[in-house]
Structures are given as C-alpha cells and as structure tokens.
Length: 473
Ligand code: 3PG
Image 1 (cartoon, rainbow, N blue to C red):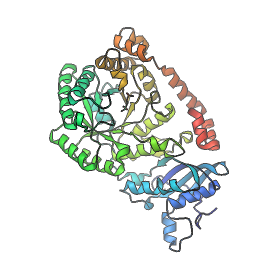
Image 2 (cartoon, rainbow, N blue to C red):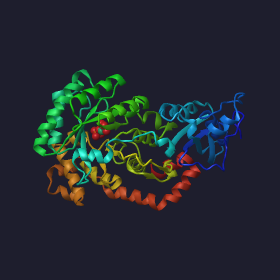
Image 3 (cartoon, rainbow, N blue to C red):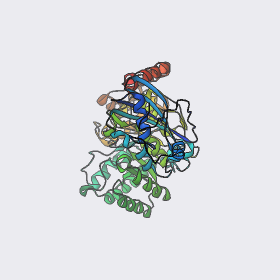
Image 4 (cartoon, rainbow, N blue to C red):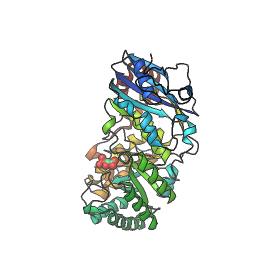
C-alpha cells in the first residue's frame, strides 16, 4: 500500500544494530494502518504526499526509511516498527534527528494518535557522544559513598521560590546538618530578584563549609543555571573561576532548554569538569496524551550527551509513571544492555562501551516512608530526593533530613523502616505523618511482570497503546 507513489514496506528487512535506528510507533488515523505506516516513513525520511520527479535510485536505496513490521490492532491502528539508515542523519546534530523522526509526522492530518515509544540508537551513531564525564561512580566519589554504596539522599529547598539567599542557605544548612548529601534548587528557581543566583551560591557555600565541619561529609549543591545560552555560559565560567567543582553540580532544566543549548552547555561543563544534574520539568506536557514522545527517548539522549544524574520520576510518589516503567527508566540511566519489553514500548539496545552510567534520581512526592519501596524498585544506586517530605516534617527541616538518613541506614542494615523507627524518633514522626509504603507492593508488581512478561507482550501487540496502559496503570 504505497503512499506518495512509493512503498516503504519491507517486511524481510532486519535492522542492523551497528548501522540502523529502529523506532517504535503507535498510530491511529483515518487511513488503513499500512498506509499510515507508509506515510510516517515517507514524511520522516525521503518522501512526501505525491510522487517526486526528483527522486533517484541512489536516494531511494541509501536514505529511505523501511517499515519492517506492523502489529495491527484495528483496521486503522497499530504498532509500527521503522528502520532508518545512519546515512540519513547529520550525525552530530540532534536537532536534525528530532526534525526528521520526531518532527513533521505529528502534523499529518490523517492521524488521530501518534506516539513514539522508543528509539534504538545504532552503535555507529553513538560513537560521536562522550556520555557522562562523572556518571554514577563519579557522583559517588564526590559524595564519598563509593565504598558504602548507599543511596544518596537530598532535598529540594521549599518553598520552591520566594526565600532570600540567606533564608535559602539557612534551610540548606539545616538539611546538610541532618546528613543529606545534596541540596538542590527547584526547577523554577534561577536568578529572580528576591534570590539572586550568585548571592544564593555564596551563601550555600558557607552552609556547606559549616555543615561539612560538623558532619564530616562532602555536601553537594545542584545549582540551577537554566537560562538563555549566553547567561548559562557566564554562570559556568563563574563557577569555574571560583573552583567550585567539589561542591557544585550544574543543574539544567534539560527538556525546556532543548537539545541545542543542552549539547553546547554540556561541552562547557565537561571542559571544566563539573558534574551535571538534569531536571525534566515540562516534558510531560506534550507527552501524556494521544500525541507524544516517550521519556525513554529523551533519557537516552541525555545520557549520551552526558548528564551525570537525572530525574526519572519515582513510581511511588506524586509523578506519573508506573513502577515498571520507572524501573525501565532506571535501566536506561544505568544499564549497559537494554532488553526488549514491548509492553513498555521499549526496544532492545546496547550502549556504546564508552558511555558511562548516569545516576538515576527519584524525586517528586517522596518522604522517609517510601525509601524501602524505592530501594525495592530501583536498588541502591539511586539519588532519593524529598522536598516537602523534608521541610514538611513535624520537627522541621533538620529532623526531616535525619528521618531520610535513618530510613537509608535502616535499608542498608536490612531492617524495615517501621522496625527501625522504634528507636529512631525522627523516622517515627515521618512515618506517623505520611505512613509507610510497603515494599511488598513493589515486589508484587515486579513479580507479576516477571511471571506474565509473555502475556503482557501479547496484550500490547493485540491492543497497542491501550493494552500497554491496561497492563500496569
Ligand atoms: C523536584 O524537583 O523533583 C520537585 O520539586 C520535588 O518536590 P517534592 O519532593 O516536594 O514533591
């Protein structure tokens, strides 16, 4: 079933992981799914709505996309697998990739739904990226947890905006004094008049010094520099001129910045050897409904580009995302090989050997009572952050921080938090305030996934995106 005079359907084609991008789509529209698939392949590679007198054999053979698999759900809907050859892309240019594969196709008027689940990046494309400079192990080194291997714990100072630099740094000090590794700016705090970035930075450095003398820890501050590119550049230069690499992690609102600014600013942070912290604020807006792009794809780009620690949601807190999906996002951050899980819209992929793991950040609606469940889901290589779950503690910020550290100590000793709380009053207060999230709930979900992987796959192939939602949500 051709579209625009050509057929892109090639069911015998088998993508080569060195050279081909594989992309998994869900689509529904007013044409048969076979034609929709052809339209997507055409518009995202070499074709258009009608036959081209300028097409030649070389272009067709070297640059076209190939629809190699369709799993039909209804007459006009289904899952589509398309392969794109490496030559199609301007390899050092992510914007060109976005404009091709994640671009014009969303506007085709025949489409009622279009969701791009995943991209398996060929190894030939990954060569150009250097990945995280510090990554999971580098951040552990900064925090001094290489040997203990405990989860990192941090807080987002709240209120999100409004505190003066001195007030902000005072809250940060309390959090550090309570034993937290990291304090971070919220995604919407940068350089407002009431809390200028430089003033806040220097005040926090005093807090780090003072708290460090008391705790013996190397405390960290994720400083949000997100802005137009020139201002971010000035801020990184400023941080470097003060030699703050040991304590400051450069925080970036990765999604709203866009790939172009992100790619360039990461070159600068790497040159100066700063670690980086990625916040994905804004991502969910265009990506939760019928048209969208899964976070899996952005996350892969962020790791390839070199974000050292990255927010991925929690599965047990306030942000969307089933625990099973969060587990997958955790793997995208720190595994080397990714297995195919069609019920999550997830493709098989292997990272190039030089790409270090990124430290996954669980953040959004967390408190001490959720740490056992988080560790059951993500393991111990994770940075757990709680904002309101620290500053809303009945005893205040310091006790909120202590409650998080106690929950981490408990999990490291293999003692469930409620038991540990009997002799640790701050943890007890936190559990009384917000209750305890039973890790067995997570264990059951993961067990269910393991036992039913085949059936879940069949459901996804038969019912498409709806089937995937039915599985876990
Ligand atoms: C974040 O940056 O992840 C959020 O501000 C989390 O805030 P919360 O812990 O208060 O939900």
